[in-house]
Amino acid sequence: MSSTTSFQDNDQTPKRVCLGKINGAHGVKGLVKVFCFGEDPKALEQYGPLYTSDTGSDQISIKLKNIVGKNWLAEIDGIDDKTKADALNGTELWLERNKLPEPEDGEFYIEDLAGLKAEDKEGNKIGTVTSVQNFGAGDLLEIKPQEGGESFFLIFTKENVTDVNIEAGTITVNLPPEIKEEMP
Image 1 (cartoon, helix red, strand yellow):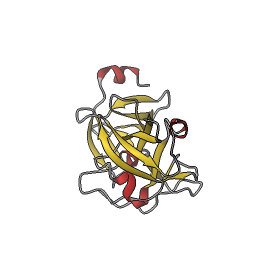
Image 2 (cartoon, rainbow, N blue to C red; image 1 turned 60 degrees about the vertical axis):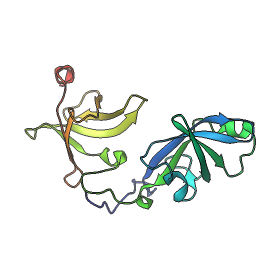
Image 3 (spheres, rainbow, N blue to C red; image 1 turned 120 degrees about the vertical axis):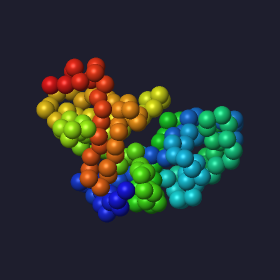
Image 4 (cartoon, one colour; image 1 turned 135 degrees about the vertical axis):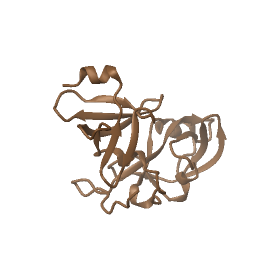
């Protein structure tokens, strides 16, 4: 893993990482249910206020209480009733990427995959990773083909993505036959 020195987009907004999402209110006292995306849910409160979008300036402070199923119950500063908590449903919780620790060797942040060049094991260019999506069943790489055409999704598994090299700016992919057939 390399340390990337620039985490900024063209508009000079520092790159952010989504750490979780508010999944509704819990009870009548303003608690919310939070689904955490990372391995360490406590990261949601240890870095201070979190942004409520990937580019905006609105922030909230969160304090985790306890886990309930797949979610954590949390207090949000200034939220003290169910109506206010309900208004936060669906809010994503973002942190500036440069505030997170650098990944250890062989690890990376999912957000760091966007922009990497996708190639096959022979080194043939396939396209560029434009985003990483997760609709609930796992991470999907959205890849814009090298030769143009529609972007496609590739399930992010060890079988489909055999190597990630952040330093070289590449991922090595093994495209399933149904995707290969659709390639221009």
